Image (cartoon, rainbow over the protein chains, first blue to last red):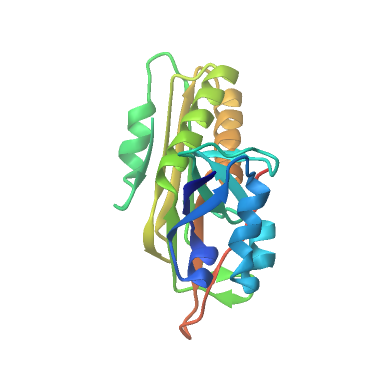
Length: 83
Length: 139
């Protein structure tokens, strides 16, 4: 069984991956770390940047061991620079 | 209150909006677009946000400020989109009965905003080059 998730990308990550929203499908029980691995698999030039980024699940910063549930909204949050 | 906006920030109106009869102190912080970043000339900045999460984080900051200090009112506004040198990108206004709390609460609010709220800026140089600024990585 697998689940699909919407992933929002921003700033330098969105520019380098040339996409702002994508859908990824992962096996049930996958974690934030699995999502990170999927994101960098096809775009090796963003590995460093994604390593420096946080991941948010449902608008909250999430640890790499967080297990994803169906319908979760993911976002890659590169180092923030508001203000 | 807090808001994200694409319009210029009316910081005078924002300051007036937090004034209260019981508050003898109002502190306003403005973040403005600088003409230099290190030794690199900046002509304009582009700001973008993840709005639903940015609003959630701003709400949490407001709640924490109200929990920690005797706030009359707090207003935080961050502008998004393109801004030239000198324009106001962010404003935080806080009123409290006495000045020490107003300074501390305002400082906490802007420091935490810059640390946690998912907003990013891109510096654009005169030669057309641009670079996303990397601040902190929230943990």
